[in-house]
Image (cartoon, rainbow, N blue to C red; front, side, top):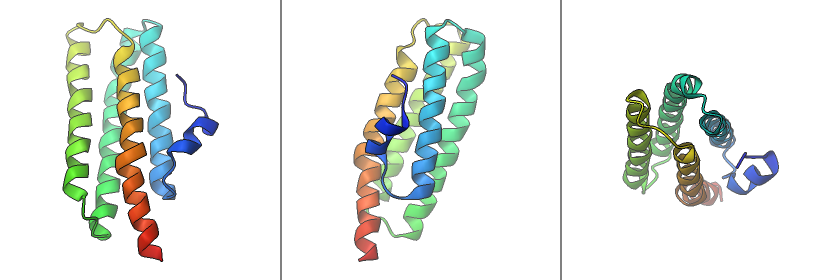
Length: 133
């Protein structure tokens, strides 16, 4: 499912730089899903490393902020990031070996990412909100 701005509002955590990164990543995942559905394997092959790099950059950005704010659940958050990066890495390997036959993976990755935002990132947003008070 393509992420609309209206639907995305549910996933904001009220930290502008993180929310913007989430929006951009969702757009990249939507693009990968569309390429996979269309059978555009070569274009998907080119897009996946870009998405992977964007995820790494975004996760590093989040983690730097969490360290700076002494977030008590940093380690668990980093573990979730590592799991998502491992999944996209495995997908890229399957794609390279031409073992990829489904558009489900990009969609599954987006669902996992949205779940991560909804729980783990929202928890961080709540933590920051409480610190402001």
